[in-house]
Length: 107
Image 1 (cartoon, rainbow, N blue to C red):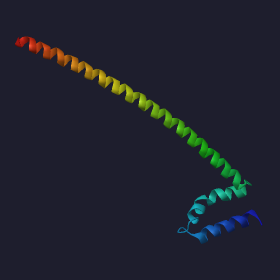
Image 2 (image 1 turned 120 degrees about the vertical axis):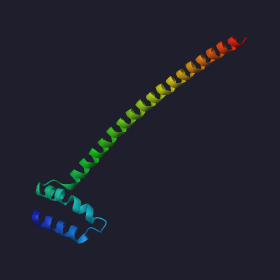
Image 3 (image 1 turned 90 degrees about the vertical axis):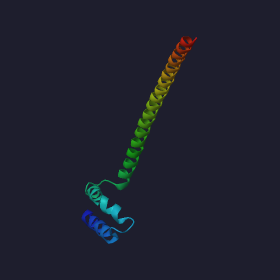
């Protein structure tokens, strides 16, 4: 069987499955790449293995970035909380001083 015959069979298969089938839309979406792979003698499992490896690498990088974002957010949150506690303590101290001054004026 020639490459052209294989491509014709795959195109016909995709057409017969149609857009309402389970695999038809997936095959139709990838038909151009499949045709190129057949034309260029690229075995499909090589593409699948490469795609899986690429996906694993992308996920690993995304996980690393997410961990960095979470760590930065936690650090910033802790700094905001510490600053809020410090501002609250300062406000309480000022309020006590003003209250003591007011009491002293009443005596």
